[in-house]
Length: 371
Image (cartoon, rainbow, N blue to C red; front, side, top):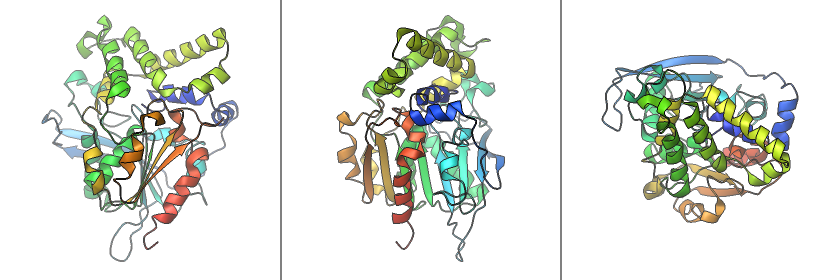
């Protein structure tokens, strides 16, 4: 559940209900000053999916990168930053003035002239292998574990990255932070998980995902995944299901206070979602979290770990009191709950470093090797 233009368009739409994002939409963004930009594809042959399916002889993974890797005298990479997007997003979700323009430019916290920034398109997303490439519902039923393992394989075996200075994740990417830190506990110095909870996807969260999938599959136009035109009715239902979880009631009331404005906002968001979203890709992306449950292994995490949520995030509402006991199991863990302000935007706050940027700066300082 992340920025939406794909499902990314929904959260970008929700982001319209913050003062910062509205201003960014109304004025032409300043050009980004980022060095050594690269778009690259890697291939893994016969990747072993967790489900046991081997229907892909070649798994393609796409990355956007900035800067160059630097090694110390022992050959350890000391400046690699890995940033993972949310559900149905892609690496380009971060290449904008709001995110990259506040983090990657010279002198900023993740200065791309100093760090090697790695932005992946996860399995099933962006320009990486996905159902809409042709296999439709015969595509392997990937999981978050698969997505993390595939990126680790590419980084270690093809990119030459043997260590990460930081993993930063938003929404789905935040959940990946927990998986990364448990599965490869010596591989990173720090993690920041923005908008997540380290427990099994259940309750309203799973119901919402399941309902979105059911909406699409119940549409006769879906045809078991072999549709020739997008199942628009089902996608509209899926958008509606997800909207309640990713929007901020307080911000919505402030930004669209009349019936006419509210209906216009909904129609704009739904129409954009239908236009840009592939139904099968969406089903797979929403269902990839089905086995996610880092809670039993939280004590395995060794890195400095910041878990950052916002108080108006309906996906991870603080009243559930999940994070407080969980973070105590992480030796170097810290839970940061951002209060509701005019700048927060519900779940979409995860991609706004003007709000949590100081916490990231602190994390980079306290996790500095030798600190």
